[in-house]
Image (tube, rainbow, N blue to C red; front, side, top):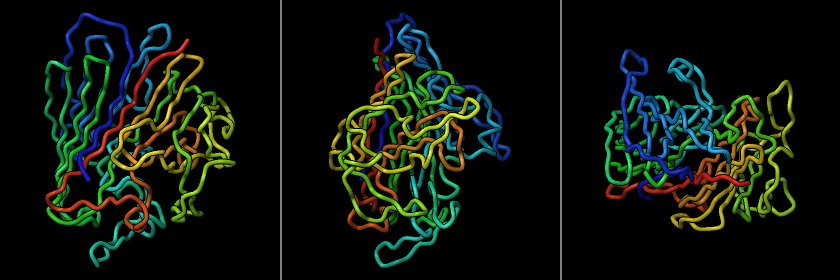
Length: 358
């Protein structure tokens, strides 16, 4: 396994300003200051990321008329992030998604994790989204960005090994926003990192996403049991509600109540992409016919978890497309491995490419 990168590519008009990054205070967590980094490129596209959870809190993208609006769900202050748990824009680790029963065995030893989503462990327990990261901004010929650093102690949330993590966000002058993950360990461990942004391409968080058109580049998915753990099977999407090979409205599973969207049964499942792990290719495309915004997701990850806020977070008007390894991979030897050993580097890349259509 190696370093992870998420890229959000934005098609915007040309501008004349120089790309730059700024830092400002954004409150305090556990008595320690939180920093808000604002990245702006030559076109005026803007991303805001805070050091608490290395979290993307805003991303301004143009509609078909060129009007910029925030297309990710988030808050404009720190306080809600300290108490609310929808993982808005957060960096997820040590292990994204679920681990069955809160335990796994590696090299003959069983490790026990907190059951923060009984009866399973979700997103690493009290994970990276609740940690304060060190920051360092930078500028170069390609744009501006920020490095976030966190050292996860051996045994943190039950995971073995001291894990050194670096996450780099970059807003490029070519209108790309990248999030790059780098992780190394001093003991054998498991790692699965992703970003948990919820996209609302309308730019209005009050608008339901049922009219969004979704395409997923997957011939198969991993069926799950009553507690959202994969059965271990990989089955064709053909003939199921998971078949998005031909683009169609995600709202076929959405009902609207009092201006909010929720799902009948919902989407919170892993699609098996049409490629092996490590190969960079298209994963999904989401579009909003009303605003004209289009988002194409490309990744080196083998799967994409699409979540529409249908369970504890019912009513959220957003779609999360979490490129990652499969849920419960440490307990499923047939799934692509998430094991990281000393001397190796965790690595993946995902691109979210924004454009517009008439």
